Image 1 (cartoon, one colour):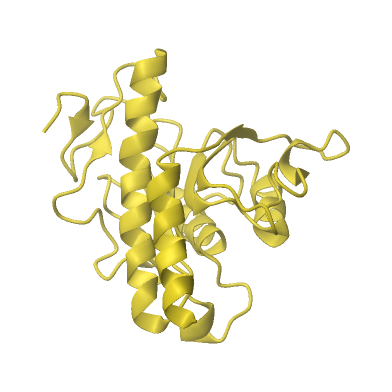
Image 2 (tube, rainbow, N blue to C red):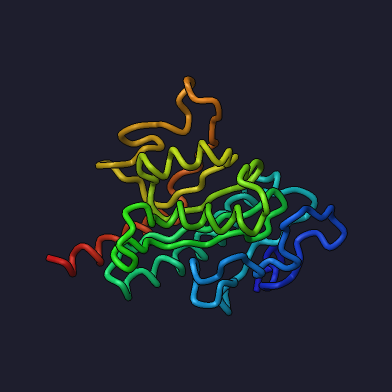
Length: 212
């Protein structure tokens, strides 16, 4: 395993300041039933280690970090296939890089029109963090958010969005609309797009191809 990633369960900053609601370990999430089957980092996957700052200051360091986190989101997206949901997965990490929430599309599974990957990941992150204001947090998702999810990012005060595949039909963070950077809003979200884009897009193409 590369030196710039940490094994699941390994704290990002052992001596860092504690916060009410903070998990003691990276995989200790609130309401695990809303994310992966285990509610923790899948075995064999890793969360990038943080060395002083998150995300890393260098371009190469950031790229490795986003790639690794997108791997977690992709893993979560595959779980949606079992319920015939569109395979989209999301993770939320805190200002120090700790995993706070995971989510996958569960609309078909639950019959809930709001059960998008981003919304479920944000809910779990807020419960784990102990605060609805997710300031300084990063959401990583395999598909560009829709209008609802883009609005949720703004309302949750998420600092950064990292997305995989762009959505030219319904994307609301740069493709069709750009709600997260609208100057009329009371909060702006940094957008990093196209991370492992081919893999994210392929998962969606394969899913919709099988539906035809």
